[in-house]
Amino acid sequence: MLIFSRYSWWVGAMVALALLLAVVGQAGILRPVQGAFLDITAPVTNLLSGVFRPVATLLSDAGSLHDLQDENRRLRLQNEDLQSQVVQLQRDSERAKELESALGIGQQSGAETRVAATIVNRISTPFEAVVSIDRGTNDGIRTGMVALSAQGTLIGTVTQAFSGSAFVRLITDSRSKVNAQIQESKVDGIVRGTPGRGLTFDLAQAEIKAGDTIISSGLGGNYPPGLPIGKVSTVSGTTQDLFRKVTVEPFVRLSTATTVLVLTSFTPQRISLTEP
Amino acid sequence: MKQLLCLAVVVALPLFQVAVSPLFPISGANCDFALVGLALIMVFLGPRAFMFALPSTALLFGFGSDHSPGLLLLAYLPLLPLAAYLADLSVPLNRYTQTALASVATGLFARALLSMAATAQGADFALSYTLAQVLIPGALLDAGLLTVLYFPLRSIGWAPQPTSLQRGGF
Image (cartoon, rainbow over all chains, first blue to last red; front, side, top):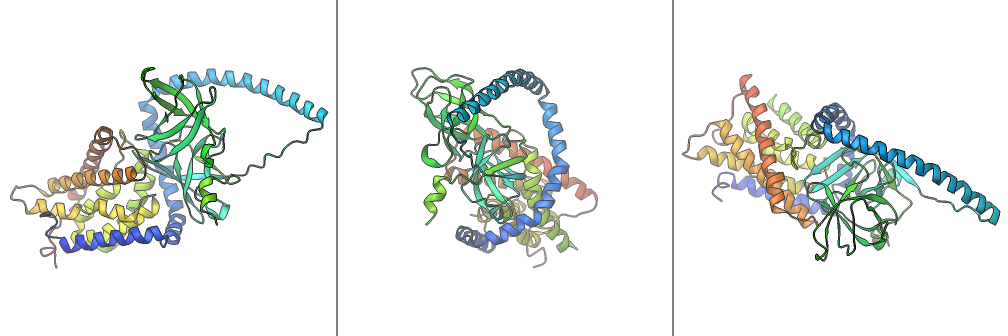
C-alpha cells in the first residue's frame, strides 16, 4: 500500500470510475457509444491491418516454411482425394434427383440464410480469440448467433452485436464450449478452446483415433447438428484413463480467415430462452 | 501542443492495440501497445497527462475490443504509482530503468488480471502456461518495444518529466 500512498486519492478515484464503468457496461448504457466508435474507427483499423498484415504474414511464413511445404504436399493429396469424391457425389446427386422425380417427391427447400461479413480486427490474447466483423443488427445479426467460415465450418458465436458491427468469439477461445460428436463413431463429447488458441475434445468415452472428423452434435440447441469443426490430431493417455486427451485441428485456419458467415436462419437455444 | 499530442496518442493506442498487436504474437503473448504508450506519456508528458490518458485509453480500448473498460482501467492503474514509488527509492535508478521496471510489473499485473477475468468467464486456468507463454514473453515484448521507442525520443531532445505532481507543477 506504500506504493499507492503518493497517488492514493487518484487511485481511489480510478477504482471508483472502474466500478462505475463496470456497472454502466453491464446496464448496456455505453453500447450506442461503442457501436458508433466501432463504426467510425473501422476504416482506420482496416487500413492499419492492411498495412501491417503482409509484414506479419511474411514473418510468419518465413518461420514456418518447412511446415508450409509439408502442409502443401498433404493438401495436394487431400485435394486429389476430394476431387474424386466430388465426382462420385455429383453422380449420386443426379441419381437421387432422377429417383425423386420418378417417385414424385418435391425437393425440400433448404432455407438457410447466411450473412457474409468481413473480419475487421482480431482481439487475441492467450485465453481469448475474438474477431470483430463489419455487419451487425442492421443486417439481422443478433447476439448468440452461430458464425461459420466461408466453407461452412463452425468458427464461433456472436457475443455482442451493434448496428453496424459485431464481435464473434471463436471456438478456439478458451471460454468456448461446443457440444460435438465424432462423425465416424457418433460418440458425443465437448469441443473446448484451450489456452493458446487450440482445441480439445473432452468427455468422450470411446475409442478415438487421429484423423476422426469432429462435427457439432446439436445437443443443447445452441448449434445446428452436423457443422464440421475439425479433425482429431492427437490422442494421448492410456486405455485405462476414463477420458483420453484428444486435441483437435480446426478445418479452417482461424488466424488467417477473412470472411465470416453468420447463420441468421438458425435460432440457438440461448437466444430463444431470452426472448419473451 | 503537448495536450494535442497526448490526445492523438490516446486515440491511436487502442487502434494499434486492436489492429496491429495481434498480428505479431510471440509464444502466446502480444505486445501491449497501450501499456507502452501510456508509459511513454507518463515519462515524456508528465503525470498530469497520464492521469487523463489512462481512463481515456482504457475506455477506447474497451470499446474497440471485447474487454470491459473498467477492467482495463484497473489493469493499467499501477503504472504511475509504481513509477513514483521507484523514483522515491533510495536505490539510484535512471528514468529508463524506473519506467521499464514499472511497465514490466504493470504488464504482468495486467495480463494476470485479464487471465483471471477470462477464467472467471469459464476459461481453463493453467498457471504454468500463463507464466511461460503469456507473462514472461509479454514482459519481454513490452520491455523491448519500450526500449525501441524510449531512446529515439530521448535522442530527439524529449526530456523525462518528474513523476511527482508537486514537482511537476501542481
